[in-house]
Length: 129
Ligand code: HEM
Image (cartoon, rainbow, N blue to C red):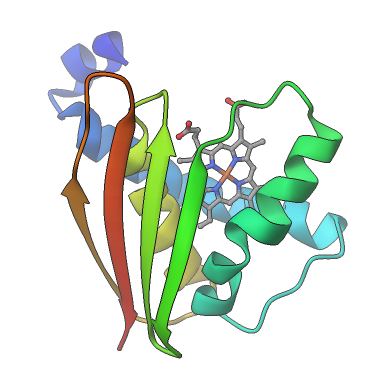
């Protein structure tokens, strides 16, 4: 990441977001191969922890997954609580943006970092407009 930052002059957060956006359609193909289908972005994000990453860990027991607590405010708004031992909240933001593009839905995504000394903790608010 440090090398890429030097090469591109882009901040790490922007690189992670761009990578997440690029990566999402590839993960979506993987999901279809796993016979997982969703009605749209909010539906998928609500199932991220309970279905998607749960299936991922069965297939790849060594995968290092973050945890997401999802609070569904209503059909168009959710609050995602990201926790990880790795600082990849901006990768999550890029994946969520890519997910909106994939379903051709307009998502507004905002983040509030609440990191501590021991874990990376970010609140991610997503609204479909
Ligand atoms: C918008 C939807 C998704 C979000 C926001 C998301 C978020 C993330 C993030 C942020 C990580 C990095 C690890 C960390 O932060 O500690 C991660 C890891 C991972 N995700 Fe997801 N993910 C999504 C969908 C998917 C899908 C659809 C798949 C595959 C079908 C997938 C498979 C994986 C795998 C295999 C890893 C572990 C990589 C490793 O071991 O280093 N994710 N996910």
